[in-house]
Picture 1 (cartoon, rainbow, N blue to C red):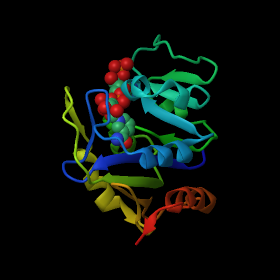
Picture 2 (picture 1 turned 60 degrees about the vertical axis):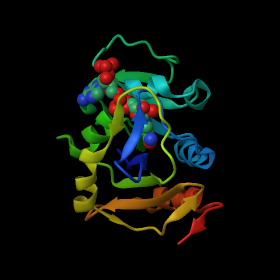
Picture 3 (picture 1 turned 90 degrees about the vertical axis):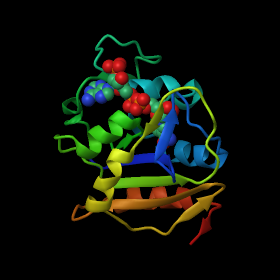
Length: 193
Ligand SMILES: NC(=O)c1ccc[n+]([C@@H]2O[C@H](COP(=O)([O-])OP(=O)(O)OC[C@H]3O[C@@H](n4cnc5c(N)ncnc54)[C@H](OP(=O)(O)O)[C@@H]3O)[C@@H](O)[C@H]2O)c1
């Protein structure tokens, strides 16, 4: 296993990442950041997030879809594999990009397996939150882990209403080429401070 990178976009207030199946804001530059960071990488996501993704953004990506239903049907069986436990990733040699949602973020940040992300890409949205139907999904319960176990190593990169920064796990080796690639994407066209 190489690097484990976790990336999210949360609202500044309440740490919301979704309402129902949707992200309650539309920030094209943040979407582009996400697509560029995960391009040609191996992703891990929960079944609900998988179903919420636009097909064109995921069909050619290698993805581990987490579901307790081992018979869950993915849209591209050549590249997408259903897993029901983190243990199934232990021999994976690719870098892993953890793409949500709340259950999967919590599992990777607080779970027992030794698959803790070395790198977190923390994108924070500061605009209006759309009034959508559905349950508000937050990552409040993950924030304590970050404050305790991670430190920010980048500047802040602002595009539209989203400000991103990169955090690394204290005391762990972090692959510099992975960090540099992510920071290059975040800083491209951003206001930096
Ligand atoms: N803003 C962001 O950065 C961001 C990123 C990603 C997602 N989102 C949003 O987040 C929402 C979806 O997140 P969510 O938290 O509701 O769901 P989720 O984490 O995407 O998926 C939950 C599902 O994952 C499976 N699962 C959970 N824990 C598991 C475990 N330990 N082992 C195996 N499988 C497990 C279960 O699937 P089964 O029910 O099939 O068993 C569960 O129903 C959507 O609104 C989406 O748009 C936002």
